Length: 153
Ligand code: FES
Image (tube, rainbow, N blue to C red; front, top):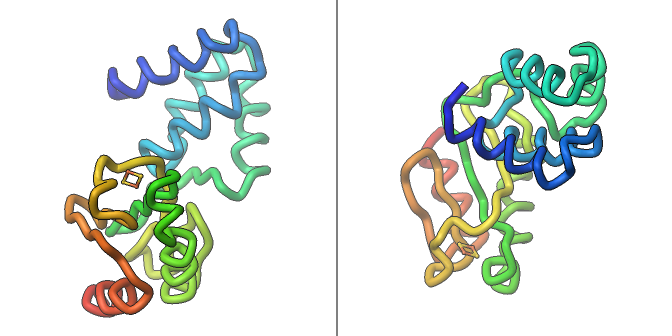
């Protein structure tokens, strides 16, 4: 597991005093950063929280926003923090969902795209903003988003 990810998990665990309550926030953090929850993360969380792995699996599979599989070829990260929200990021997210036929944190059946709402990407001056892999897209409109996605297809 990447040391930065481990550090992030440890921070969440510390915030919750290492209690079981930390499980959901820790899983959220991993899903947001990695796009999926690996078996390694499951065993790590199980051992750190003194839970059977099967219980952690149960939580991951219960909530549809967690995924056990690695995401698609192209990871779309849409900022949903306040400055982007005020400039219509919810419409951008809706447009992406319509275009791709998936919901948040899902991957298209052809494994080409994974859609992830994320917090501030540091592109607030270009709100509403998103990234597809390493490429930055700002000042988005519904039309612009459709064009970008169709350009990928
Ligand atoms: S709030 Fe969206 S990029 Fe900063």
